[in-house]
Length: 313
Length: 261
Image (cartoon, rainbow over all chains, first blue to last red; front, side):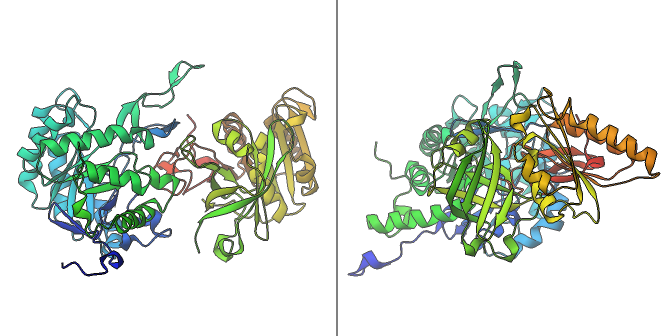
C-alpha cells in the first residue's frame, strides 16, 4: 500500500487476522452478551461486526442457575446465569441458519464439566456448516477433579485444551480466567497445547451481600463481575499475556467506548470483544467500530495493525 | 424504525413523596405503527450518562399519546432516584416497547393491582373502558396513586390498604375472594379473566385463588433486568416448562405456568 499525497483522506485499514480468520474490523461481541445474534439484529447490521462470538454451548442443554441471577454493582454487574443454553444440537439446527446469512465469522463458544463433554461439544460444532472458529470457556468446574475450575489449574487446563485440540481443525481460541495468580502462565499453557489464540478476561468472581437478610444477593452466592469496573484489570492482564505468548489475543473486560477498545489494542490485543456494554447500548459495537476508525483517521494512522501492541513503557 | 432511541423529558411530575410521572417525547419517527406500545409492554430507561447506575431499568408503559410516552414510577433505589432528578429538556436513552402484552379481554374482566402495579394495568383499563372490575391495594391511602384516574376507567373499584387509611384494611386478595364468593352464590359458574400486576406475595395468593376458582389469570412479572431484549438470561422466571425470560416470553404470563418459589 503506497502512501499517497493526500493520505489523510484515505479510510484507515481496520481489518485484522486472528487465528486464521480475516476480520473486517477488530470488534466482536463477547459470549453470553449477544445471544445468537438474533436479539440484536433489529438494532444494527450484523455484517458490520468483526465477528460474533455466540452464547456458550454445552453438548447437552442446561437450565442454568436459580434466581436472582444478576445484581448491579458500581460501574458493573455480577452474573451467575449458570450457562443456561440450548445445547449444541439445537444451536446447529435452529440458530446457525440465521447466522449463516451474514458475511462475518461466527465463533462458537463452548464448555463442559468434564473433558469428554468439552470434546463432544467441540467435535459437533466443528462439523457444523457456518461455525468458523471455536472459543473454549475453561472457567468451569471439572466434575471429575473435585470441581476445580479447569482454567485455574495449569495441569487440568493442559489436559482439556490438549484433548480438544486433537479433535478439531477449526481455529481454537482459549478464553482465560482472570481468577488466577499469573495469567501469563495460563496463556503459555494454552499456547503450548496448540491454541491459535487466547481471549481474556472472563469475569472476575465477586459477591454482593444483602445486609438486612445477611445473605448473598445472588442465588448462586457468587457471580462474575463485568462492566467498566473490571476494565483496568483486564487491560493489565492483556498486557501481561502479550509479553508471555506469541499467539494473538482477543481482549475484553468492560469495553464500552472506542477509547476503551483502543487501550486493549495498544496493550497488545489484536481484536476486542464487547460484552456488558451491549446491554446498556444495543449499538455499542457499531459505535466502537466507528470511533476506532475516527481515531485512526485523526491520528493519521493508515492501518490498525500499527497500533496493536504499540504500548510504550 | 428502531426501538432504541433518545427522547426528551417533557415533564417529571411529583405526585407525592413516593411517586413520579415521567413524560418523554419519543419523536414521531420512533413511534410508528410497529412501535406503538400495547398494554403490559415495557421500556428500558437510562437516565444518566455515568456508569453508576450502569444498567437501564424496565418500566411499564403507563400512557401513550401522539409522540409522548408516560411512565409512572415509585422512587425505590439508585435507578429511580436518578430518574426522579430528570428535568424538562433532559435527554434520556430508551429501548422499547419490549416484551409481550396482556391478551385483550373479550368482555368484563378483573384487574388487580398492588401498589405501583397500577402502572401496568391502567393502559388495559383504558382500552377496555368501563369493563374492568378494579381491585387496588396499597400500603396506605397516599400510596393509592392514580386511584381516581383508574377508577374513572373501571366498571367498579375495590380498595384495600395495609393500614386501613382507605378502603378495607388488609390485603387486596382478601377483597377479591369475598367478591368472588358473593358472585358465586348469585351466578353459578361465574368466570372472568383476571389481570394482575403487583408484589410477589399478592401474585402467589392470586395463583391459589385462580386455581381454586378455575379462572384464567394473567400476571405481569417484575424482575431485575440487564439487557431487556432477551440476550442476557438474567431476568428468567421458573415455569412449568423451565426458565423463561420475563423480558421476552413475558412480562405477562399465564399464572398457572409459573412455579412459585
